[in-house]
Length: 139
Image 1: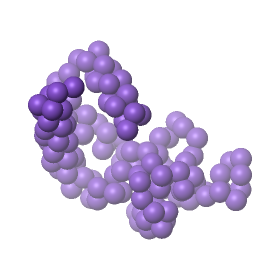
Image 2: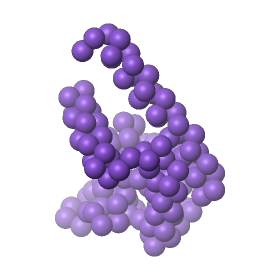
Image 3: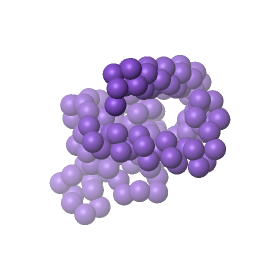
């Protein structure tokens, strides 16, 4: 890859990230969420096995103590609760409450409608997803 192509790709990626971030902030404001709280909500899929707090920290690239603080804030808002892992009671997980599932869905819907990626076809989104996954996995 040429230096000019690499620079152009990085510029496009940063521009896209900035656009997504700006549009995401509007949704966060409406839902009274901070960026870090929304990041945790993204990870907590209601249809998946509960995530251990340490794994959430790894996925967010942060210290486990930060996840403890975020978990407390989500619990105080009634959006999530800490529970023992279903297969290992020594491990703590974070699970969405019904209200948390609702807020997560509203967040996803709002961001999907206003995302610059919404203008891509499903096929184009799948292609971009595959390319971004490949780039991330090789990093």
